[in-house]
Length: 123
Length: 127
Image 1 (cartoon, each protein chain N blue to C red):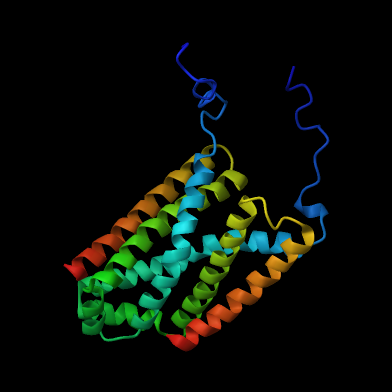
Image 2 (image 1 turned 60 degrees about the horizontal axis):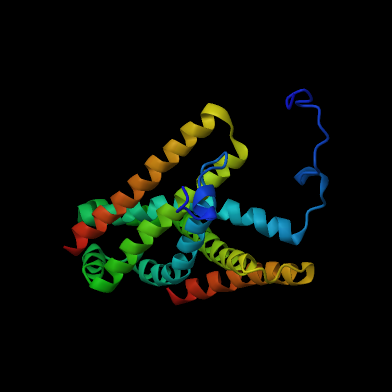
């Protein structure tokens, strides 16, 4: 114990056992999305309504494929954190736990589905 | 005991007691746009999955997303995305301890609304 710093002794000991991790995670993902979202809008947007062959050729290129894959991962992790905060604010008890679990399932599922699609097109 | 007075304590004033203000309205709209983007995000993933599946399935998904209703959903999603991005930028700025004076906070609220509408129109013109 004598070798621990005061901070180390206090971290994780509160009622919630954690501190600002959630807020910091949202800060990091929002900063990443400020870069990714405009890039996504201007790659995804022009492809809507284009012929299938052109869309496949476009997403076979490294830049659109990587931008889209990164955006999907960061978007759905950011979404997961944001929806969780919404649920924690307005829903209580068992329903809260259930909704948070469903949010996790949806977010990871949507991100994985999107990554699978991009990988299948690009490779 | 701590629970003696449960349910009968004086409560701090909450949302319902305040007049709607630009700062509170732009704040709640950040949460609404963020969560409503669920629909646009699902459609985008579905569209990509359709493109990865077959030309026929892609034609169906793409047709639906570019129908008048699809256009409406995607245009509103586009605005929500710009709005949420600008509002998020304001949060990052606030997190540094700046821009919290009432006058500045309200000016940033106007900037978010105007900025998101302008960017939505510009984006629609460009793509």
